[in-house]
Length: 632
Image (cartoon, rainbow, N blue to C red; front, top):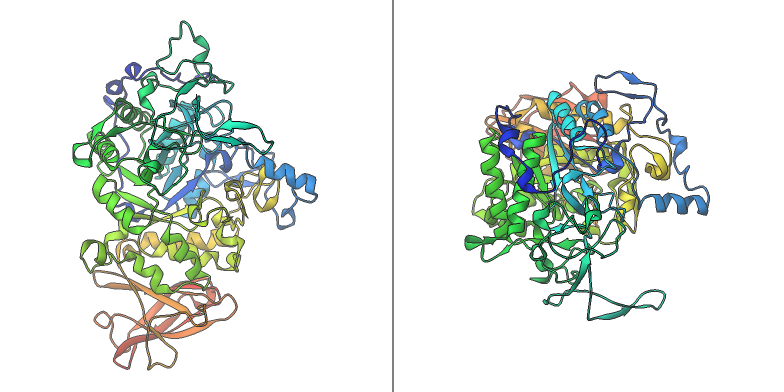
């Protein structure tokens, strides 16, 4: 199962000895404040296979013994020159691409030099053996690393290497479901496939479905649906059924078929997530929730991974599809366990779809630390930067007065993880597209990354955005390009890697993230969208004109007595200038603000003089086309 020198996964939770794992160990401490961190999310299968050439290793030394060359502009579309080639490239995106844990470990220096401080790693658990669930969200053995990725010891070493560089590691975990580990013996809802062949469609109707059996390693439902006796069914280990044993009881699953209406309760809680089988976590109202044996088993599973690998946080998948009581129970168990280890601020980030209010209410009810902002935030951020959303729509997302009856803008600073690209893009439906795929995205992507990094929330970079990946299409695969190349490389290429630290967006983002690290106000300050004026007399917030906005969009971050003024220009063609209001109590006429950053290097170090116009304390601010500036 494992390569030489690696651990062997336990079949039973009873075989784990957490006390032995934690006794006498000093664990890596949690950060004081997660809003100080910059996250980077990657899919292990699509990030690095450790075969790249001509990149910088973790110590900054050039690697020249790899086999995959660095991507050049002339390599764009080299995999889709003919329709036959394009078909091969598209099909490759639906299968394992062989990114590895060792490959990720070899690129920690790339991430560190970019300014990343915490790595969000896609699930590494062993998947069903008969399907290409390269993304990791279909686990079959919750105690094992999938051999496509590597071994448990390699994962443990990855975390240790990250910690040695001062990087935290957040692991993506699954509570809601297992992989496609059993087959239904459906007895209702007759349908026909594209070939006209009849089949029974096990879709949710609130009632149980009979189960044919657990799947064996070939995907046939030949194993009994219950605790497996290896004496009579020895072939079930390690690639059949589900492991550990404590998850094999038939009562561990809801058995109600697939979700058809994703917004109907209780369907979206009880139903299967497509082919992924829904786990029964318990029952009851949140305050009196009764956890199931399966939920208790999963708590032990994830306590093991924390102790084994010294993890710093979890991103919890599909929180919407689980009872709030189950998540409150899990959150309490994990926080108590990690505090025992000295990890006082172990972070639990929930994928909570359904909008801002639902996310807030779920956090309050479950005790999770932060929500993943994948609905309103990326939409309004992207199209503000591209000039098709009102700035107030974006900045008002961080005003929590309607939710918690407070006027402060501070609440969301550590309660939401913000990003522009992600691996699902649920908000787009079937029309997937990275930021750079449309509407001058390649010109404006630095603005989007800068706004994300310097406005409220915990910023997260989706792998490849810093290299201006531009994938788009009608399937998730098109926004999950292989950074290391292979048969499904970025920019519709093959056999070229993209770990280019001289790429302009990478270089400029690294400067911005350095500034964020240096300035407390950029990480923890209050946030205010600023009013502007073209004539110095009539002031108002930047707004849409004729369905678009081509303007300076300024905002301030204020911490204690320090104000930092930031602005983007949503015009990709023209330099824009505006009078911008700043805090009258913190600034006097004749005072100057100095440019700390601009994507036009000639501006850096120059100053603006504060004056008063129409009862407002203002500065005359110029921002380059598609530009971003920071003044203090």
